[in-house]
Length: 389
Image (cartoon, rainbow, N blue to C red; front, side, top):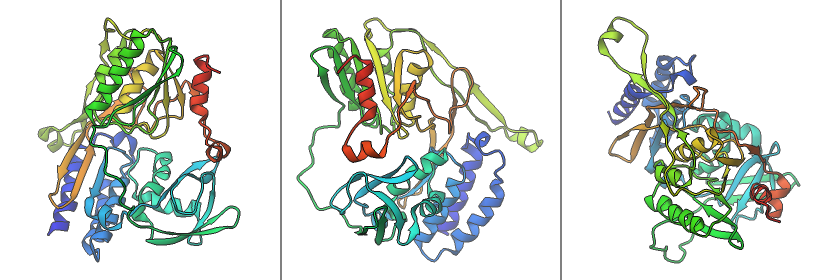
């Protein structure tokens, strides 16, 4: 009964709240639901049910439409102990703990399977708005990996990975999370790193730094939001940095009218056009440079977009994730939760954003040599533009 309820509630929620049908115009929801239902109700255990559900929801190709089960993460989510990303057409270790790997190692196979077909197989479980996003997140979903497996590297070395819980380290810092800041040179160029917007203190501390740099008459601010997956849109931070008029997203959401559906009329969308905002007195007046990557997502893209739209900032790095908007949330009460993207964003001029992302002013791609040597080409380019040696 629980499985039937979870499956039917997901199906109902997609039909009612999903705002991204335009991104999957050829998807037959009824057909994939029937196939999913067979697998879900016939699953031999909770893990098999979860994987079937993850695969079903991933077919909607929307980052903000997501099924999650804390039980799966707790039971099978022991960390890999390393991170891997596609770099220059190869699968490269970008961070390694005590796994025996090192930064810059190129992975050839996983348990004898070519890494490319291995990733392509696992990406079907990843909720993402683009293929690039899906494949980039496979090595982040450790529950998709065996507890013990062997990697073969490009140089022929083989390394066996045994997933396990990390050893207990020192007590965690009780202070709330905060943005980080430092001068890159004298009192001319400031740097602010914002890891997320899922705690109000990230925005609050960033605003304090901006005001400090404004008081010191800094000529340029480099704001690093690479890896920032969002949280709550930091409107006040935007205002502190914006010295000119700016615009927000245009949005749309399904308009469910029972009588119209009963008459067989096509579904309608409730659209809200982009709003214009005046700059606030006292905003930072120096140059602004934003650093972004493929993991810059959601509320952080809400932050970046106005600066791209009106040219206030130079944006450096990779194209961002390409997904934002308010999701519908449902808690099943057993560790399982559901998000359904209920709002679709477009750029103020009406051009598509979802699955497209925000393209940087200056694209800088990571190279294998950069990973191996610990070089940050994106920050280097920002320093160059800011006039630093």
